[in-house]
Amino acid sequence: MKLPLGEIADVVRAANRNRPERERVLLCVDGVHAFGVEEASPAELGCDLFATGCHKWLFGARGTGLLWGRSAAWRRLEPTIPTFDGRAYAAWLDGDSPPNGPAGPLMTPGGFHSFEHRWALSAALDLHERIGRRRIAERTRGLAGQLKRGLAANPRVRLRTPLDERLSSGLVCFELHDVAARDAVARLRTEHDVVLSLTPYRTEYVRAGPSIVNTPEEVDRLLDAVRSL
Image 1: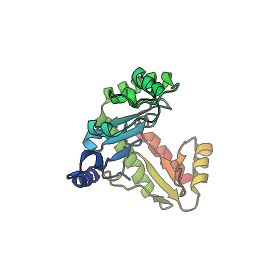
Image 2: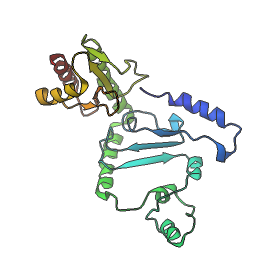
Image 3: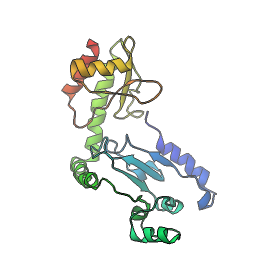
Image 4: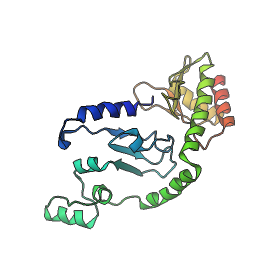
């Protein structure tokens, strides 16, 4: 389900109207399944802090992610893990408070990071910039819509993702009436070379994620595979 973040942001904004800055509610969003697939920027969504990994719809390297924040939100945060930035690291060694400065260097935890993976992100970001956010969003919605309509037409399938594009994005979840989700994922892989995933929650559904690396023909192949189970 897509969250109505714009409406949520309006409610938070109204609640904060007469509060001093230190008492205002911050709208913090885990947007890992929006980043790299949806058009809207974090600022347009109305959130204060937006966190995401970069290995999903952006197709970046694993172990990478980012945290975006408004200026007022950064002022509310205090780093708890020393960064390798010289100013913050020296303050930690001396037992002083972290200094004021740019949020990026001062809020990024220290330690030995996967720098090669970070450097590889530039290629993923460049690819998305060249394609364009609108084209990526339209392509993903088109493939997801094709998949949802095909699944909804299968009498053995219960589609769990809304057909309405305003309520869903790239992820498509479903279940079969006569095959357990875990078994369906395994059989699709072994019998049809179709790789889907299982929702990592108490209630298990089959989960597909058609994206810009897929084609309409591959969606049809998935639908045929599901019908054959």
